[in-house]
Picture 1 (spheres, helix red, strand yellow):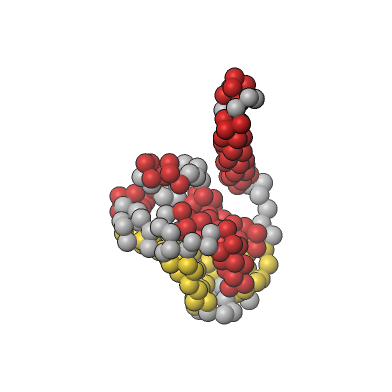
Picture 2 (picture 1 turned 135 degrees about the horizontal axis):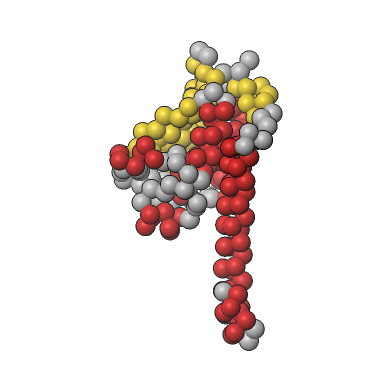
Amino acid sequence: YVNLLDRWGKKDEKTLQESIDAIKSETESMKDLVEQLLFLARGDNSTLQLHKQDFDSCDVIDEIVSEAQMIDPDHRFEMHLDRPAYINADKQLFKQVIRILVDNSMKYSPSGEKIIIRVVAEEGSVRIIVQDNGIGIAPEELPSIFERFYRSDESRARKTGGSGLGLAIAKWIVERHGGHFEVLSRLDIGTRITIVIPAGE
């Protein structure tokens, strides 16, 4: 696109605008990719510090869903929050995990579909469930979804963008907090991802 601008874009307004839009979009994608790679590199080198505090995970869910609805009004959100559901975690990193799961649900669910988020406080743990009615994941691909750069169904992944690093980052964060993921998915029916994390005070 830079070459296109250099050759013809200075005189052709349509080419100029198309090139600028493409360059902005690709630059944003590159910025996100670099940030994700740096995050994982710091994690691998054990230079990423966790700043843990006790907070109600339901408050973070409220915040993330509110942001998501502003960005994407085409999806409906249904929440069932068992308040209070305290965890001891790095709040910013925990937000990042929820954003990754909600973003994936929006990416892989058709417009107008419902995304359900549940928080269940149990004895000694908190379960956070993000469920959609999207394209789902094939059974043979499920064991690989948390691998770096893995993208389920390459042809569909190209349409939605993404680097295949989101779930790898989410897994790193959740495991550093002593938690784990449970995943249930069926092709063309939807996906349910559950974070199980130790309860806080």
